[in-house]
Image 1 (tube, one colour):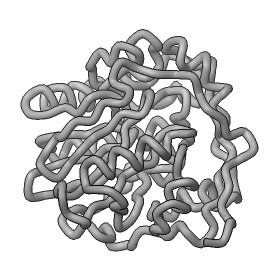
Image 2 (tube, one colour):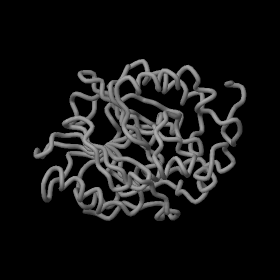
Image 3 (cartoon, helix red, strand yellow):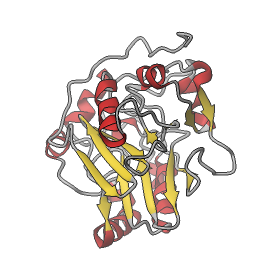
Image 4 (cartoon, helix red, strand yellow):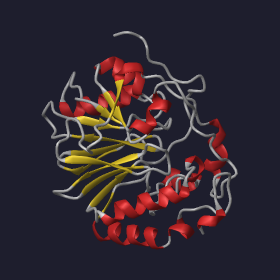
Length: 285
């Protein structure tokens, strides 16, 4: 394979972890969630088959762990049909180059994420001034330069269909990133959220380490459009998901998910939007 892929010059290992790091959880028979340090990647497919896809690509330096987790579930030398990206932040594309080189599979993302995945545009700088805790203060060390996937990344179909996942549709859920998407399956109301909302207060180092479960809006230090983020949460709540696998925190199901998501919609301004920060527009309160 041609070596046309690379990370940004600020790409580096981030020394952050949680008690869930290295743990995998079967959420549904064909839905598996695995935690890499502080972020989750999702595998969709029945174990023992060769028909599976990966959603998101972990933290910098995590390729071997992701490959090992897939081989444990699907067998030696197994490879996914594709890698789907909810968005292109560093903790969701951390191992993407090595994974594509190893597996030679296509990557799919929303059209609006393409500049960040093809070397054209950096994400806005993380906001260390945002109210919330120690992880926010650490955020200036997080990589935000674009990665370069060249012709290995493709735009998702405009009609909402998902390549290799006929039962799922993708939903545009911007706010945390311009082209952020989530994936929803109508038949069992399974939702792969990405960072549109999370089940751990991602700004708090203590809560990230302990993975104390509470529903929260998108990670504050990288969210730049709070009006869009609020509408995205309303869109996802209206789907009445039975299970939600988020980019950060443990999966949430049943009445706890329903009640928590309802509260997040109702009190989004108080729960999710910080009182101060670079990207906070007080006019939306």
